[in-house]
Length: 370
Ligand SMILES: C[S@@+](CC[C@H](N)C(=O)[O-])C[C@H]1O[C@@H](n2cnc3c(N)ncnc32)[C@H](O)[C@@H]1O
Image (cartoon, rainbow, N blue to C red):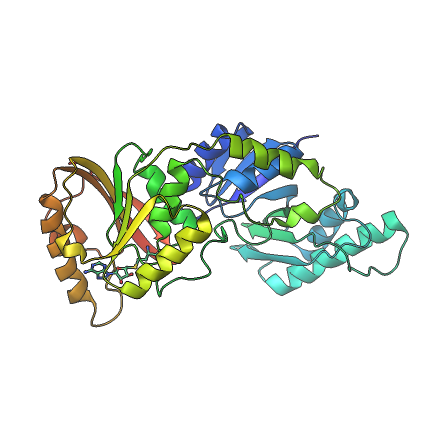
């Protein structure tokens, strides 16, 4: 039986997540603001969780309807077939958000939805009390302009938590955003790859996972692995299928940072991600970045100078890095910054820009093709 899935993603990454899902052979993929929908069977749930690089989580959408009152929310929630997904001993917490809607109180919506699901399950299981002691089936709701979407979360922890980065520095990049930047650079493992402001190593590690076509979720646990309502063979089958798609070439990936502590963290993270053999990390100043190889791609996330007193320092760093980059032969650059004067400081207008959000910070990905 096919399910309807919903993948929330960072604003600006919908198109990339949709492309990834099409390449994973999902059906009827369509992108909206901040989310991508697709259809597929139980195996699709496992494949999406294991393989998606740019999506935040994989949800099964049980229902979508309009509700402008608590009565409407209660009745339409109760009408959905929750018993197909929630066994009588499972825990089913409810969380979600509401935006631009008449039902704006998230805690009230949470209570109403919980009550409606309990009423539905009472009538199906002929029970008056639920222990909620077995596996967790997290219910997630989203209400936007009075449109309610009710989903079950198959991922558990967000997909950006690949499991390789318990150690990070002060301003780590979300793994899903780092992967998106690498995908946008069209890096495929042929040319050299470098991140001269690598911090905890997120960008080089995501580049290595992409070069080897390693499923980013191959080593982690997903909530739906504990669900009895999904065929449990799918996880092993999809994991083996993903492993069979891995490449075993040698790639030249470099990560450097001025801070030796960041480099130590990056090395430990790459080790955990299983790609330490692919990346050469070193402590170095990006202002003197140079390479002898003719071609390559730089994907990087320098300091933005957001805090008071740091703006001028960032501007000077952009200027010096610009000089170093102009000394390279044929190296493309993809650089993420929120600094509105980046191009002026860097000394050259970008060939193309793309709006991306680093958490709440509105940024541009400045692209230079050379
Ligand atoms: C925004 S953080 C990068 C975070 C990284 N993408 C991650 O996921 O951990 C910027 C990094 O630039 C480094 N940095 C600052 N000035 C530098 C310089 N002149 N040369 C190289 N690295 C520098 C900082 O130590 C910091 O780790």
